[in-house]
Length: 111
Length: 111
Image (cartoon, rainbow over all chains, first blue to last red; front, side):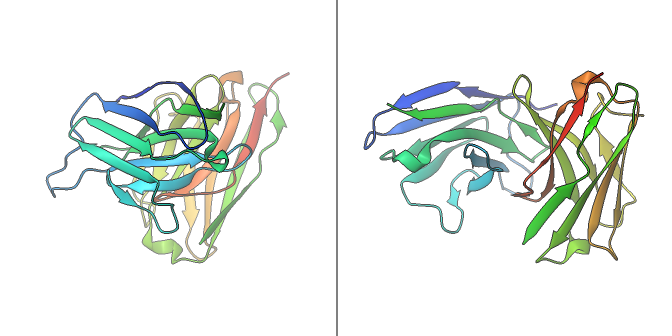
């Protein structure tokens, strides 16, 4: 089973400041089709997860451009360029290169 | 596109429960479907999956032999039959299609 390790587990950020979180995989997520099936989600309090980023760095429709994803093979990063109050929630990565597994998540709070 | 789960309840250890997930807004029979559960302590766990025609299924080791996934493409509905339930099965269960998540249904296993 592919293990995804997210860090940090908690982030406290001042509005307007950047934030970033890491997702590291125990195996490469690069598939033979050349794609890397790594996704980022945000779960706001009391809501179901919403897709932010797919295939490492593609922003999903309607997601603000302050969100960006980067990385390759086993190391991936989600960056928020300027945190806003509505960004509070639980962020997690998911891989579907081999079945599905999830990171432990990062809880983002506003200072 | 929308997924709506139902069937979650409080059940005693050893009991059974059937979860349903009604899909709308997309061609149900074109997609593999998944059940994922979430707990505060263990985070997100991939529980089960079923292929487009239902002929291929996957189960996490922790539920193998106790849970059964099925689908009715004529009713746009996914099911999860859960038996021999244990306290550690307590979670919010989500129906997932690709990167779309339902709102979840809560299962509590307790005497």
